[in-house]
Image (cartoon, rainbow, N blue to C red; front, side, top):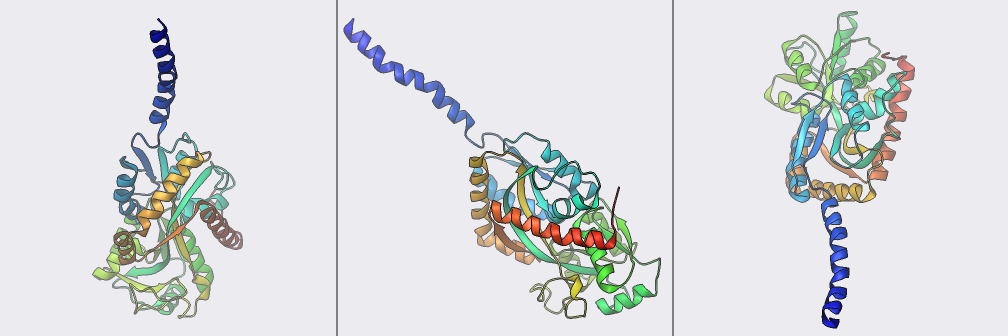
Length: 326
């Protein structure tokens, strides 16, 4: 009896620990596929970014990343869905400038607060934009395009990937910097905007290299300028807007990974750590560079601070241009 009692007592702590151990194992993150929201149609810059980081993150996390497109409202629809989802790390978003640093300041009512309603995980990339027109446009550079636009009052236009997107505000920034008044033609993503730009239905698009560079290289589009402080290494013969006398057109865009507000710290740390490792890979860096962008990782705190700084810049333009979409 004494022997059986002793064995029972020795076994009890182990048996009691099993449910707790099983619960911890079951709760280990991640233990199921992760949904990765994209706020624009397939074929755009965010799609490129998602597909570039997808293999590395899947290998590191041991789970599939299922890309889910939610185009519309310049990325606001996808960001709204993220803000309303459970804070468990199984729904994330590839964020960009438009819905986080622009759209909230264009609207009198927003379905989310870009500061309070999200957990910033890490910035992925940052890059200036390309100012592009169709290949057969009479303008050969930015100055010539401005001269042409001034002679086309009420007819010249610019495309965007959606109202409130970075491409929308880039067009408004161009209007302000060049002293013109191009009409805004919004699309549901960059891909359809590029299609109509090539076809001549619209005359200008200022978008990321990940979107425009392949078409510039193929000869379907003409790069009139880039919006960085220095020339883009992928387009060394294309002068910057600053070089051509338009310093007010300096601009760059960011992309990063975010989740809903209240993500557990360990989830944010895990995702941020794995994202940083993926972005450090030479093959990933090379893909971004070849596409006209650059890997630029920022920690959660740094990323949130950068979004705030960009919001201050774009909200000032919105006030100056008296822009409002509702």
